[in-house]
Amino acid sequence: MKNNFLIESYIREKSEISALVLATDVESPLEHIHEVEQELSNCITSGLVIFDLLISHGNKRNRFLSAHFDGKKFSSYDFKVSIVSYDICSRLAATALKQHSTEINDTLLSKSMKFAVRMGIPF
Image (cartoon, rainbow, N blue to C red; front, side, top):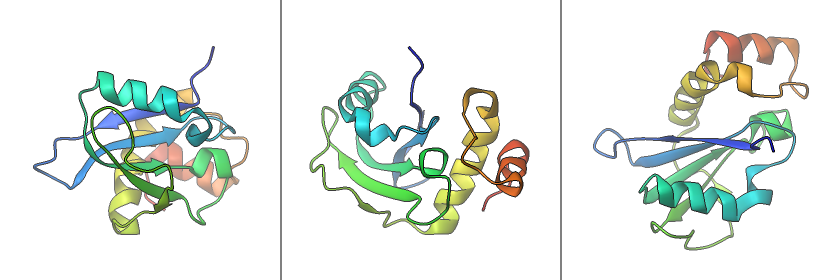
């Protein structure tokens, strides 16, 4: 079965973000939240988790959501628009999307967005 998400963990000394969850297909990682929690637990991650829903939504509007992860589960399943600046989230996501560009289904993206993903350009 194909994963609908990828997880990038971060060292919290550099950022308040502990992990980035990237959608990789048209289904949102939020539809698979228990699998996301399991993988985050396996990564021994806790703290602020950012979700990048670009691939599942196909546009930049409300692209980044955030929630706090306690090491086992999210403290609330009421995900909010990210409290971290769009620029920071966009730069982190651009790097991760470029590294995993062959693993994502980019059918919902415009040609210019596909190009930006392949080149690692934040948008």
